[in-house]
Length: 621
Ligand code: MG
Ligand code: MG
Image (cartoon, rainbow, N blue to C red; front, top):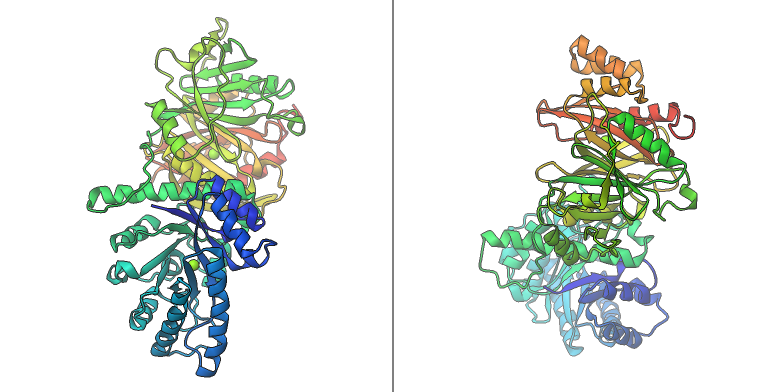
């Protein structure tokens, strides 16, 4: 299906918006009135620019407050309409969008609305333009698509049809059955937006919180399925008003937008697989390969943070098992828990001196080649290979914030592990320790939070969990978790709700290791003198009040600084933390029991406060 984006989705001037849309691979655009009015280019120049970029001009919008006015106002509205239709023509747009009126002048009179829209359509026909009538969810008298369709049906003009906007329909919870009764040749246009499920005024919700399909809480694939089943074959056009996107770079936003439409088409394709019969030309990326776990997590370290990080990993129970053949890179390992320490990563630039930073995720894939093809089809940028002679050919792509994502198969010959010369001296510490990497917590730049969630969800085929907000001592944080179907790869993406320069534990990354027995592991960590983060006694009193835990277990938890969470089905999480390693990283050890599927999010404020109070492991020893 054709893809399109309204210029209102992107920041910048009209020229920048158009260039970004073209670069991201959109087929066409909707030009938004405000962008045109503010542009120094004439409508004809804009038309040429769109053509030169290889884009289709799909629609000009919006024309407001036209229908159902008293007769003495109609002449003025028709004059306005004539000017807009001239403009639509000059732009080369085949369609003008008309929103249902919000004006106090509008009367609640459907037959008057039909009659006047008929006149508008007659006028539009003279210009070779079609008119798509859209019910705004806050329209004065017309606020749902079924009502808009009744008016259009009664107007009965070939140049008049409806525009369906997923936000207006899904935000009001309007039933979708009526879509199927609109003839396909009257479904003129389709605008798509997702949104988080919020209880708020629909106008504010629409103007500030729309997001791209797959980033909110609406069932866009289900909605789109209804629309294509009704015979709609026009463009899939994004119309998103979003405060964050308005201040983000238009280039990455356009890529994020395009990726959302690719994901939406894939989701629609899955629905149509079980209900054949549609003649749709859908983009279908290669299927996701369910990640089988983290092959490794890579940390960038420097001469100051590196030795301290090595020391901590040793106390955690990992062994320095290998040295890279050609680079200043170490492999630290225990069972399937592998950390790669990179002493030569330029991303640890001057302002991060003395820190440790997660820079790459190694994802275990049964078919790395297919994982990479999928990432490419979903327009993930490929990273240049950094491979020496006789070294493993690991393909990687860049996440929105620049984190590298590698796809690999560790247990195969040859394996990426062969790039490391085994160190004979590397004895694995005795006692219990981590067995694998359970999850990774990543801090996302404010403008990229939505894009990152969509990236990991689509590229790795992860399932999103709801997002949660919590108050850390120095800022309100939002956290969105994603997990693979088998639960072997889990990510928690975190962002300060208000953006800005929040520092400290709330905005640090973390690597969480899984273990078999948290109490035995904690005892071994103590034995190896790993500084486990101390948790206040008040926390355990509160746990006791809430859960009535076994007193001996509670006492052991208190002694070791083990935190606890329980879900509705009785699944349990036991976890402990280190203090901060510099300003950007800490480590966690978890044990899941009884199918617990979360991350202990409710303990995050206690953890962050304790880390703020504790000594920094790097700077204060
Ligand atoms: Mg709309
Ligand atoms: Mg965690």
